[in-house]
Image (cartoon, rainbow, N blue to C red; front, side, top):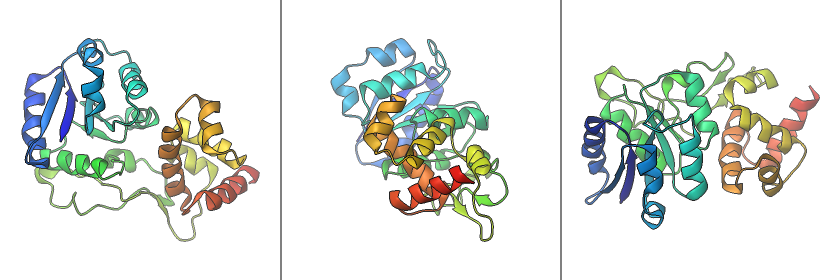
Length: 240
């Protein structure tokens, strides 16, 4: 297994390396402490990583530009943001830029490795503090077994494929705007027009793979199982 860690704090890097070494018998790490170092890494080596853990505020960072550039160069590499901030707005924005998880540095090592395992298994990790901002009527995830018993008092929902609608409280467009990122709302609007993934991606300037990631979140928010049900639900919302 190969993991990329980009962070400007050596202690953080060493702590993360130590914990993530538990993921496999042999874990190789590629390190970067600035955005310049991150983007100067050998492209072939980065393309082989199984996961990239990226700090938001490392030297040289300008918002989410380094996340966007890494994903542009290596769209198949799962990216998880590792950050000192616990602002739900920042978390939501990071996910809208294609990150598959957001891990606050205040969380325990056990929660971190559980979150990483979830992402490696194809899921999306959403912190508890972001889920707690979801409006009444929508439950944005149930505690995953990996989160149970996490030490240090930290709580996290390894959101199973997250939001389910509470009985008697059908999702509304206003509710969905609070649950979904701005980009996901745009995808939802195009979905309601019956556009295929390729055209949605072309309209928004994102890859088809990113469209699929956003659609997965939309399906969960609408509590539907497939694209056909999602189109019907989205059109109903648009007409409401």
